[in-house]
Length: 221
Image 1 (tube, one colour):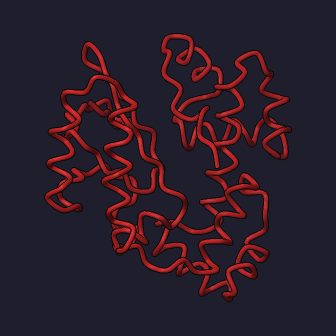
Image 2: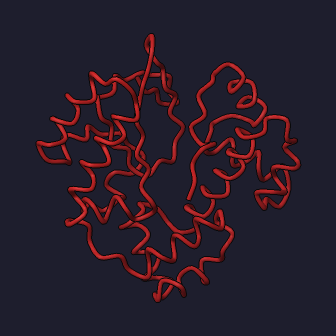
């Protein structure tokens, strides 16, 4: 189940398609959970579906509404697996079948990858230049392909870096994390935690002690 910040829980479908995420969502696991997560690089979901990402912004949807009948078959195959590695191969094979429908990558996609690899620490002017677009064109393309402004995306990347640093090393001080994630000071880090996580870093610190689940730590590019 997923929960929004108003404490309301919603039962999730077997396969959830998540658009560009801004708000915090809490996950409640009933008994036991085995799950396979597929992360798309910035602009990748747009290239696959052709749907403007601002239409999927901050929402979770039933993937069956977006993919072909093979997705339903895949769901059935995933319900009775000997191990997760087998499931990963099934998912990979299904997605590989859809490679021909991916739209052509543009300089824009390469520019966003550069921004991603630099954890948001690249000016919007520099990123737009790499995308071979004017600032206005770049902002419009960001709204279409990643569902938000480039400034907001860079801010989320910086916050993600800080969050991952804490997940990977809980003993690292918040002052050190703020410096490593290129925040001006610790107060700016706290501000972003309140915006994106809904709470202060100290609350996140306590919550992570109560769960073995690490959603961000193993993300790699």
